[in-house]
Image 1 (cartoon, rainbow, N blue to C red):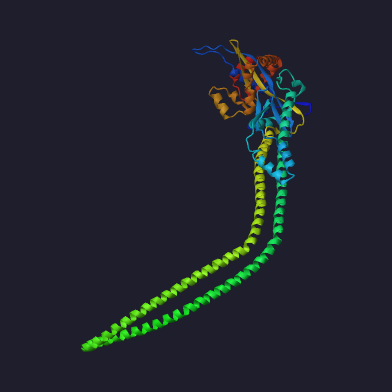
Image 2 (cartoon, helix red, strand yellow):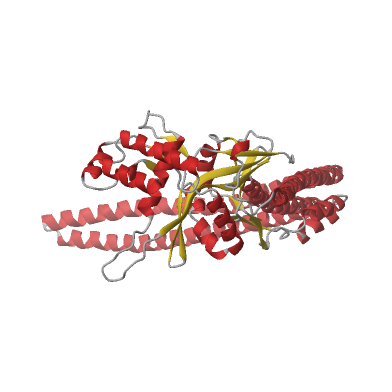
Length: 541
């Protein structure tokens, strides 16, 4: 930061949107004088008598505010050190040390895997929270927005204005430089951490991809190592299985034929018995019809004879059905036996097939086991890397937020040099019973007289109170702290007393004349009634 200091002064009064008429310096001082008189306690009271205050001084003073260029922004400092700002940030484990460990461990998969396992929670534990305090720095966004607008209206401080009315800043350029250096140190630290952390993520990604490629190469090597032997074994197994299949088919055909040979006589016998049964059933039906016919014709002897023959046939039928049932039982037993033999033969064939494939399966299992080891190692490698990179990414986001936070406290600034901005305000000091009271009148906008002001004047209220409207909220809040600062800081109180008395508008003849001229102009604009004008004029005269 250049040692050159630009001294600037923004205006105390600007024209409000509703005012087109000019507003002179004499009108400004006359308006402030009227405000001060209206603010002064006049004494009285029915029960508790108050002593009338006398005006010790009414002076235009200037509040010092530093604006320092930093990284394209303007950092704003309270010249009376009534403000400060703290930045809280978390500390993290040494990122440079982590990067160096990662670099050293990347020479072999074993050391790299051990590094990842040992540092899985390196960035996971919450860091210690630290606070950087920047004395006098103003970071309130509303203030900065207001002050940026106000600063755009500032002009270089004229030599004639560099008088005793300028309050000496409690913060000098050395202190501002110290804060800027601390800002720059923090910024470099945060930026360096973000840079190293990004390099860490690149290194981990690059190293993991490299070792994953190595592991995939090892998997290919394992496949190639077993491929020839497995192919050779597959040929041997294929021949064995072919022979076993042929033997199985032969045995299965032999079994089928053997059972068919045994089954054929039984089926023939069953068919013969069934035909005999059908013949007997027809005879039985015929005998029953004959018996019914004899009964119908009254031939009892014939009926008896046919019934006896039917009974004989029934006995013969019973014997035949018994033989059929026995034959069917033998057929079922034979089929169950065939099913059992078929199952046994197949089980024996499957056992021999399994035995034939045993050596091939052993080879394939050995190959798959070695491949699985490398695959699991690769999956763990990628999982550990992804986990750690996720943690690093979270830390980077926090640090980037810290960096963004550092650049959020300034206002847009084109100036390259340190500026000391003297913000004008008027301060009235009243005294009664050896007690002093201070009232601040902040930068304002001058209005044009309107219906509301005229109405209040008609009701006996002071129209002049509507002439000046404070422009800013947060800028005013700093100015309004001055009375409290005077109370607690004896040295500052003495300085204000001396400056105020030396620049008291009510004691300087030229300013008193200017106030008189301003009162006439305010009367002409109807801000003062004739009565008020006379009262204020007598007082100032």
